[in-house]
Length: 111
Image (tube, rainbow, N blue to C red; front, side):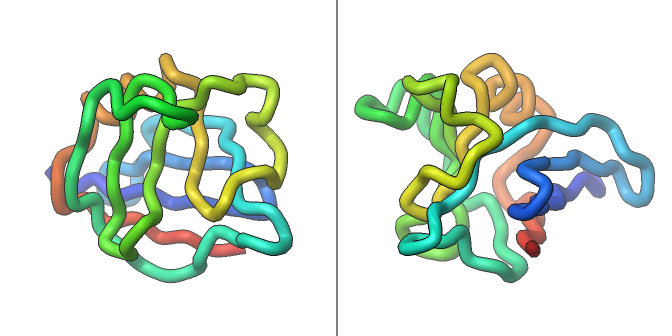
């Protein structure tokens, strides 16, 4: 799979690509001013179902320690700058995304 993820923190969007073809765009929440989502290129290093706490139904850890893409127990937060740097998604969206990407998928995060 030549799939990769593009995250725009300013647009609050996560886009899933297959090479150059856009497959889907998802709304997200990102880090707040005091704990911004880090820009850079990372990879998905693990997946965990039902991680507990505020992480919703699924956690996908990034190669930057302590950061990930995850669900949320607060769907009203999507579209806002509210997290401690992680990328939040609606629970149904993070489950769908997880089913379409594998460990090692590239994640490009930018403003």
